[in-house]
Image 1 (cartoon, rainbow, N blue to C red):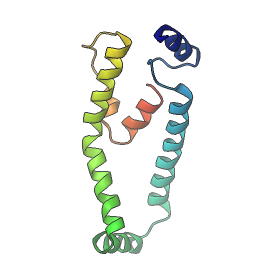
Image 2: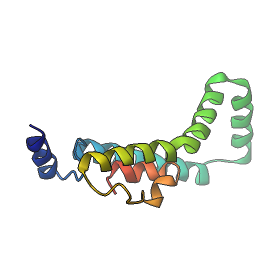
Image 3: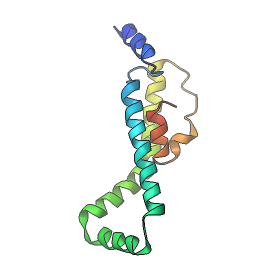
Amino acid sequence: QEHEQEEDNTASGSKVSGRNAVLSASVGAIATVVVFYACGSCLVDTSLGDWSDFARLATADRTYLAFCVDLVLFSTFQPFLLRKVYTQEIVKSGENESDPMPQIYNVPFVGLVAWLFGK
């Protein structure tokens, strides 16, 4: 049964057993669009007043504060979490465990998108 699953993953384009290539590519594409839209909006459509409003809301509104804290925590812990997942994937696939994790996985948000695309 495991052999059939590996064949199915290979046929669907996934290099890592247990990963759905179509789902990973879809989520990766959505994340890429969101990141580019957010960066573009921040650079083009915002003014100094918008940033001061955001700072006021981040200190006064618990939802905004939670969003800011989530981004900081995710940026901090992403490399550790992806390293753990990468190691588990290597062990599952039977490849050499001493292969280093790609450095792009250490870049917050970009590394996650790269991992979702299977790079």
